[in-house]
Length: 116
Image (tube, rainbow, N blue to C red; front, side):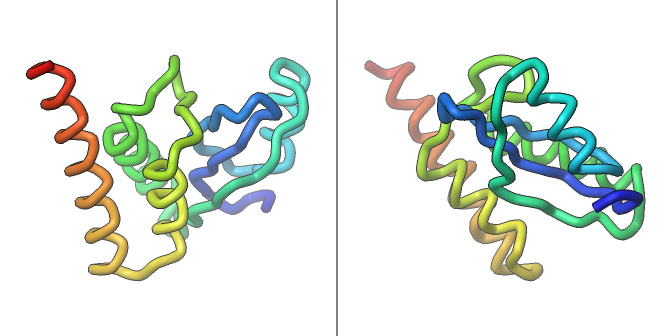
């Protein structure tokens, strides 16, 4: 996927998932593998309009998945994270519905933690 602007989700052998952005997914994966070990591609969101759109999509992903953040750009491999990544292949309103539901679940989880 060289030269194609994408947001990606890579899964480490330990399970955690890295959300990031790049113009060359294979080169980025190889670079990260030197530090984190074997990584597999879990999801790719093409951003045909370029770097600005890619940056917005990546920030949106980190915001939606903030509840499951481990550190930096890494998140826990939970059902909601996989549902969100799967939404990258959906169109318009359907994708927004998934994002809303994942964000709502995160909010409820936070509220339960605060009220506990």
